Length: 127
Image (cartoon, rainbow, N blue to C red):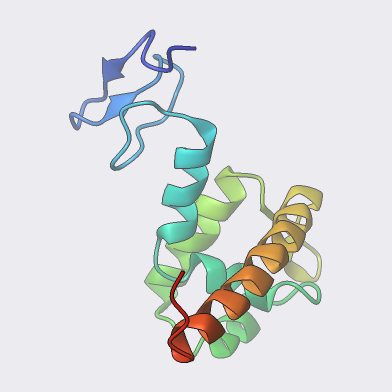
């Protein structure tokens, strides 16, 4: 399967899969996994999702939970996460959507793997 089938450039010169795709830093393919990894790699994204794992939070509570992240940075991440439909706003503040909770559960598996991997590094285990 060719992922570059309809490759076009955005106005900023970033590669996109087709005219309806959004530009993704570091990806010429526009594959969904690359879009997700780009989003998750942005500063504060994973921390915001982590803090919302137990339920809704107001902007100020979320800012405090994220070690006093600047309002500008927090607004940018929340905007990104809302656009990706991983976070929504409601009467109690910001909360993970069903998709956001599903992603969080999948990341928990990755966290378990990373813990085992790190322990192997710390113990000098080499395969």
